[in-house]
Image (cartoon, rainbow over all chains, first blue to last red; front, side, top):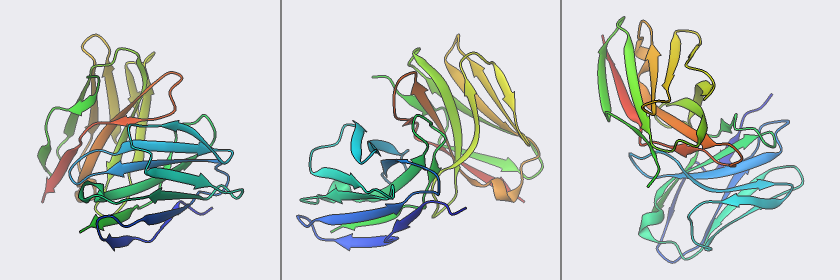
Length: 112
Length: 112
């Protein structure tokens, strides 16, 4: 049984650019949630995807968007990057309706 | 606003001693709580959970206590080991909600 895989592990982007982060969910899991973790803080919920649709969203602007694919993998897209977007982006997979997440190791995004 | 938070940002413990990590929550509607451990460079790892209809739950070397009267949650780690050094987060969920709300975390350092 594989865990959650995220790519890339590290990324440096320039302010104003766009970025795509990828996540492969754990085998058997059909729901993916994305969290942003700023340095020294707890993770903050961005959104969740189930059946290829957004299932819920936190307090993040529309320039944060996502996709889920038929194989349950997911992407997080951020447009018009700002310096404050620098953070660790965590993907978590689970079964529908379950909060027993399996987290990936995250993608460390630095915006300069 | 309603949030989940930890009393102390750091905790230093002698190897072999017991650790107690505290968390206060303000949302009386929360009915499910999880403790996570996050090691450097990794995503949060599930430790133990508890529902609001319970006061105590035990796992291997860990115990979670829930005091609904004062909205307080604690994680006790018995015989703390060097491998327990990490950041510990409590997270809460309200029934029917699709996300976890995390506190800021407590960094535990185990002294040899």
